[in-house]
Image (tube, rainbow, N blue to C red; front, side, top):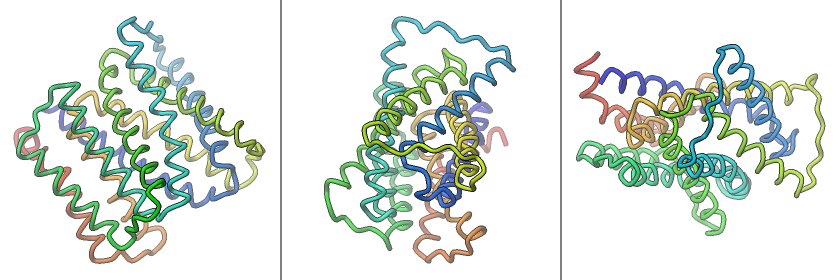
Length: 292
């Protein structure tokens, strides 16, 4: 039970780190081409991972034959998340896009938790899912606009791939070191985004003297810490519970908007944030009571 509390705290921290993506992205803007941003960050993160492996004297474990399919699913899903995500987010209201992304990813995680790990869908977890969905709806109710179904499908597809990614990570992250599982993820992101950047003939320029590039490196560091936290945290907690905890990113995003940009949230977004917090706490209350 104590390990589940540890997983809760680590994933909550991961949710906070993910919420910082928006802060860095505002600084980067359109100064760096989209897929060039992704593969350059992936390359930086992979560099950090190898440095961490050297510093911790961690050896890469040979991938067992029966695990190759899981590794390939993790790497492929990590890479393929980005193209539909960025096409959707650049062509539809951001609130609608995020609603579709998180709604689909959470439902997929719940289903795969049942299929892959035989996790029991208790009444508490079902109630948590319902409350989380209600919170999502209220968070983005002012910006929901279901227009072009093509972009809505792409938003849902990216959410589906995210749910697949975190679910199959749990298939292998108890057998392989967290740093190694991160390498699977970021190698997939590097390969897919590099190919997309080449296909689109994006203009590549490296200039660490500019603010957008400093922010891009900062986002790479943040991404390294976030992915490490999520992959490590999932070692200790069910995927169904973990997927709800990761929705904390949205609540942290609202708080960062208030603190950094003096944004005034609407009543519905505040109620939605509270509902998301209730949803992520609800399945974990019994653990906290036993092991505060």
